[in-house]
Image (cartoon, rainbow, N blue to C red; front, top):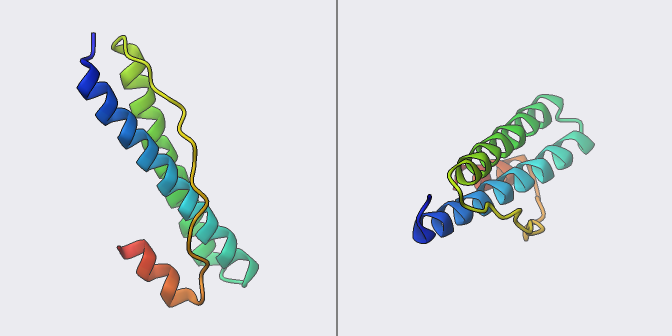
Length: 92
């Protein structure tokens, strides 16, 4: 059985992974609509990777008797001005 503190910490990380995936998806969509095909493919891949991290944590918590929560996802608070701005956010 997983301890409640560990379960809460892992659920927080699940939420962080989901929000990162969503942000990268927004970046991919922004880049795709501006003709940056390579950049959009990169961010679609990053989005998928973060989602896979989230799923691994969900399964880890549940397999150990805890309850992984499906997190609410925040809408990205920043709109992107230019490609440089996208990569500054990515690097932070």
